[in-house]
Length: 181
Image 1 (cartoon, rainbow, N blue to C red):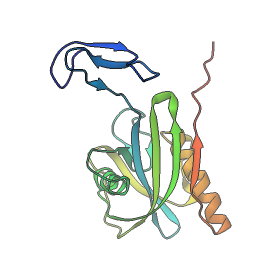
Image 2 (cartoon, rainbow, N blue to C red; image 1 turned 90 degrees about the horizontal axis):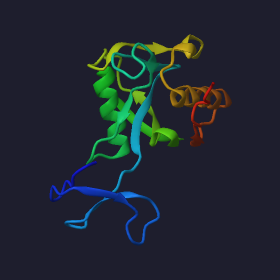
Image 3 (tube, rainbow, N blue to C red; image 1 turned 60 degrees about the vertical axis):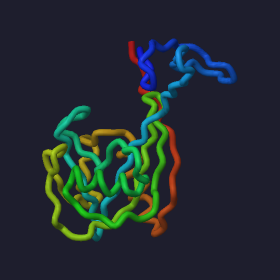
Image 4 (cartoon, rainbow, N blue to C red; image 1 turned 30 degrees about the vertical axis):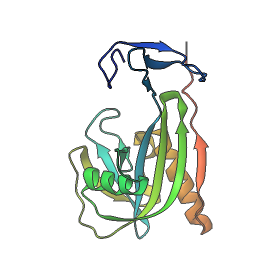
C-alpha cells in the first residue's frame, strides 16, 4: 500500500502507538490501515452418499478438483458465502447445514471454513470458474488431483466421521510447505 484510501496521502509502514505490529499509517489523516487474513468459505454439498466437486477453470491449481469455495465478500455471512460460492462454481442450490471445518492456513494469511450442505436437486453444472462438476462417492474421490490441502483434509475428516456415524466440528492448522534445497 502506497497511499491512504481515506485521503490519498502517502502512507508509512510502521508500528502505530499502542500496537505491536507494523501497519500502513497515514501521517496526514491518522488512518491506520489493517491487513488481515482472508476468509475462504465453501460447502461440502451432499447428495445421498456422494459429494459434489468442481474441477477448477482458474488459477491457482487449474484443472484440479475442489469443493465449491472462495473468498468471502463484504456484507455477507459465512453461510451466505458458502451458498453463493456453490451457486457460482457449480450452479447448484444447497441447504447450508452446520459449520464442519475451520482450517488455519497462516502462511498465506487465510482461514478456510467449510459447511456441510445438502444439495436441493441434481440441477448443477459448471459455473464460470469450473471446467466440470460431478458427484463422487468416497471411493471415487480423485485424491491425487485435489487442488488444496484444506479440501483433502476436510474430505478425509468428513468420510471418517460419516463412517463413525457422527459428525463433529473440526479445527486444524495447515503448516507451510517444507522448503527443499
